[in-house]
Each structure stands twice: as C-alpha cells, then as structure tokens.
Image (cartoon, rainbow, N blue to C red; front, top):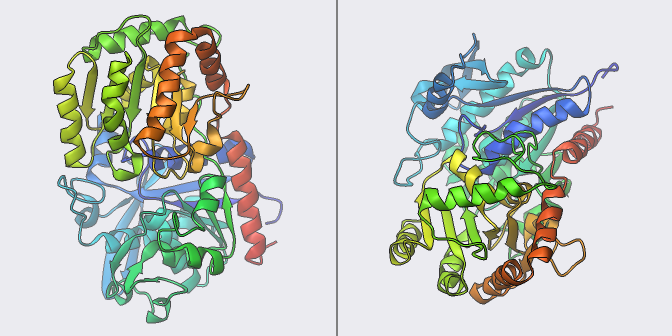
Length: 486
C-alpha cells in the first residue's frame, strides 16, 4: 500500500443517533472513530440508507446534508439513480422510493417491507460505486455489518474488486431470509443458490451469501464465536460456519466512553465517578420521582432496557418480578417489541404502581437516567452475541445480573470472585435468574460495603473501543493477506 494506511468501506443499515433500533447503530458509529484514532492514516467511509427518520433527525439537530455523489445502479432488470450524501461523518444513500418510509425495516405493526432485499442491495451497490470518491481511492477493506450489508461482499467478489472482504455478525438470528426468486432479481447468478453460498432451506439468505464470500467473519465476542458453531446457537448455519467460512474470530464490542460518561453526561440530574458516587444517589432519587416509585435507602432499584423479544429474556424477569418485589426491590423496564409481553409488563405496573415502572418505546435520555439511577441491571438473555447494555450499566454503576452466555460471559465476572463485577447465572430460566437476582438484592440490602466494591470495580472496567479497534485493524490486515494483498 506504498506506506499508507488502510482505506475501509463500512456498509451498514443503522448509525446512531440518526437511524437506530438497537446496539448495532452504536457500534457503527463508534468503531470507525476508534479505528481512525488507533492508527494515523486510516480512512473509513460508513455508508447507510437515508431513511425518513434519519433525514428528520439530522434536520432537527441542525445538521445539513452535503452535496452528494450521484451514481447509477443496475440490479437485475432495475436501473436506479441514487445520491450518496455526507452528514455528521457518515455517508447516506438517498433514494426516496426505497427509504423514505416509516420504520427502518418494516411498519409499526412489525411487518417487514416486502422489498427489503432490493433496499439493501441498492445500499450495497451504491456504497461500492461511490467508495473511491468517498475514500480518495479504492477501498482496501470492505466491512459489511449483518445481513443488510452482506451483499456488498457478494457484489465485490462478482465484480472482481481487489479489496479484502470482512463481515461482522452482530446477531446470527437475523439471517436476511427471502424467497429464492430474489436471486436473479438482485443480479445474483443461480450458481450462488447452493448450500455452500446463499441457499438456506430453499430460501435465499443474504447473510449466508455474504459470509460465504468473506475472507474473515467476525462476531462481537469470543464466546459467541464458539457458540454459533453449535446446533444450539448456530441458527441452522453451524455446519456452514464450520466448513465453508474461511476464518471466524470473536472481537468483543466496546462503547464510546466519552459519550457514555457519568462525569459529564448532560442527561443526568447529577454527575458522579467511581471514586465519588454521591451523585448516583441523587440520580437514583430523581429516577424514583420521575417514575413514581417509592424507595428507601435499602430499596434496590432493578432495571432492564431491552427489545422485548424472546432472545432478551424479559419474560423471565416478569416471571420473577413478584419475588423481587416481595424481597423489597423496585423494577424499571424500558423497551418495546412483543405485544403480549408489553401487555404483561403493563399489567405488573398497574398491579404495583409504586413498585414497578414500565415505559414502552425507545428514549435515549431516559435510558441514561435509568442506567445512572439503577442499582442492579438485569440482562437474562437466552443468547447475547455481545450486549452493550451491561457495558453501559457498569459504566454508570448499575451492577449487572446476567445470563452467562455470549458476550455477557466475556464481560461480566461473577461476584463470587475477588474481581467480580456482577451476578451471573448459567441455567437460563426463571429459577436461574432469581438465584442471581436474589444474590444481588441481598448483597445490596445486607452487605452494602461489598456491593459498593462490586459497583466500583464495574465502573472501573475498561470498556472502551481502544483494544477492540486494534484487534479490528489486525483482522483487516489478516483478511488482506488471506485475500492475497501485501
């Protein structure tokens, strides 16, 4: 590369805070900045769709879209003219017929857009076409996030581009499945519709197609990298991952520790540090007032912030809520998703109005106040590729109570150990969760000095992107070597 560093094209479907449904957007925002900070000369262009919500949020924040690069894209029998426009350090693909809609992936009732395969094929093609202009030259690495970015790797191989191809799996449960007749409609040869590439039980999997063409596949924690090679966690792709993927590695996510810092967070009613946590008591009292909870000094506030899906195990938290309340705890839940679980949580809040607070939806500022005001943070996930909630919680002094799966097992050390930072359980069911949660509640109520020591270690944990960024750069260079580049 003639002495210069890497040019990296990142292709993703979300970026915080402009278009976000979960932790993916946080990673897509924070990782490029960490890569650039880790090594002088690294250039990253992140390309995402210009959804309606992104346009509105940029405008509300007073951020103008810059002049764009127009590209013409041919996909199957379709020819589309799109514009790739810069704003806030990100490049947005402007194509109103595809992206000017409510919802990133579907409507308010949870129905996915029928043309999602086309929408993200256009994202991939636009990113590849514009990449030399965005990066000041052709990319050295194409980095695709999840199934929505995966076609960038497929098209790059079909086009014979010399860039190394890297995929990151943020959640293997989302495989980008669609009818097999999308294969020619997306400009893909039928030869790719086989068990070693995109075929998945007679459907087309956009994720699988991208993984097959990747030089390296990254998952967002080492434990999850091992778990997805098993039938229990492989989502039907464990054999494919073991035999058809060139290289699989796990790199644990970090967080933006400047943006998530209780010393400076403007969303909090008071600031605090690991050395001086008096401000956390203020945040705790303010959260109780805001949500209408009755608390005393020995009342532990247990919080959960999650998508309300079976993966996240919030139903298990609802199962043990009566026990937790009987033990003197208070419960706060923020999230949305499964309508049945939403109704169940609303029922708990109605039955215990001074002990349970439920807020349905996505509220970034409230989430920060919850992290700062909670004493314990529950993540009873049935599986968790990495998880960011436990990292945010530890940063804000909320001791995590987690299932020992995936990235939760990699980032939280059980309090039984001298360097413990939380409470873990291995059998992921109601009794398992209660076993860990009751330990946390009892520790808070009866051995506060020990609890405070656990919280202090949790706050002191280095969850920054610095180490992960170095690992990513090393992996990108390994991918280039595997690809045959110097």
